[in-house]
Amino acid sequence: MFSELESKSDLEHAHSYAKSYVDGIFDRTVTPTEETLKHLERFEEALPQKQGNSEEILSLLHNYGGPNTVATLGGRYFGFVTGSSLPITLAAKTLSTVWDQAPAMRVISPIGSKLETIVEQWLQQLFKLPQNTAAGFVSGTSLANFSGLAAARFHQLEKLGWNVNEKGLNGSPKLRIITGDHAHSTVIKAISLLGFGYKNIEWVPTDDQGRIIPAEIPELDASCILILQAGNVNSGSFDNFDVICEKAAERGAWIHIDGAFGLWARATKNLGHLTQGMEHAHSWAVDAHKTLNTPYDNGIVLCKQPEALKSALHMTGSYIVTSQERDGMFYTPEMSRRARIVELWAALKYLGAEGINELVETMHQRALQFRDEILKIESFEVPNEVVFNQVLVCCGTDELTQSTLFNVQEMRECWAGGSQWENKKVIRVSICSWATTEEDISRTVASFRKAINTAKNN
Image (tube, rainbow, N blue to C red):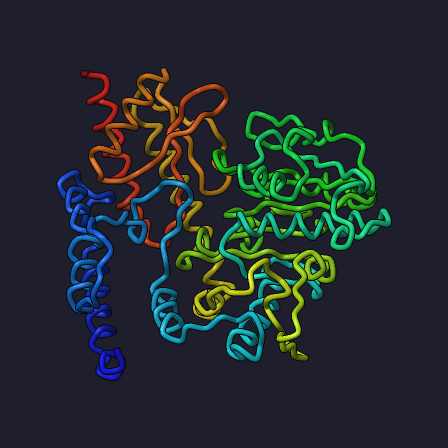
């Protein structure tokens, strides 16, 4: 093994295979073919008893693993709001993987500590948040929502005279959890994990775009945690922060915003109005691996009450070495985590404010293009207002919609997923890749045209 590291042969093979993969990413089918999927059987074997050959292992991955990936790096994958990856971030992640840093403490990774400090400041500027806003760099919005709501739990109970770290939840003052009936599943999961119980949620009705109706929000006070949304996972809609947030904060409620992909609208010139008023919230969750197009996994929790975040995610131990600078473990649930900050820093450094604006607004333009082109085809409808990057498509009847979606996925020219909207089956198209061109959208629409014609003729 020492000789393999010295010769760098494994790294050279991996680099060569990676370049080969990138060479074909824009021309291949978006999902693996049935024939290709059969090759996954080559990975089925008993646990090896002897040391293997590293060159053979890498070859196996390249020849039979690579073709069985989903081409999310390309421009025609529109499922699950899965972003692509900017070339600079792929390169930065490759470098950071070799560094193998775990930035829990500055003493473990000075570069990790420094980059997290710098990016925290950059995010404050991009999202127009107070300078004391803390950032925790986690795996994704699932954990970011958990962390933000953990901070909310600690802070709201402390105001009521209860230290949840010392006393737990048994016998604690009751906190009220309030959110819209279109809340994302990761929010519900976080509520469950934090011990609130999802059956205790006070659900607020939403309008036909999935936005909370402000007049339906119940009376709020210091026992409340109000969860809002920047980017409905289906329609892409944003709650009306300008009307809701400042009043809710004045009444003592903690406001958390789930902004997995939508929070990046804040960093644009023409879409920033969607997030007006969000600065009055207390915590925010956002992914870099979606709209910003860093590699997986890359999520961020932001909190304007740093002590609440640090107290909720507290860490102690006689062996821990703290510093006067940033020790990242105090802002995340994990101590052991990779230095995902490297590719996030690289993305922000490479794009700058102007590049981020162009990246996000171009995705919106491609979404508008898709809407306009698909509506020219008979039987297609778009039931949502395309305010950001999400387009919903339906075909008159649920049966026709599902048949069309099946045909789209089987053709593999593009990939979109299905969902339910206003009691109707819909096709959900998420434009979230830097690589999606006008031609990609037109090719996708042509695929939809062929798919619905096939569905009608069968």
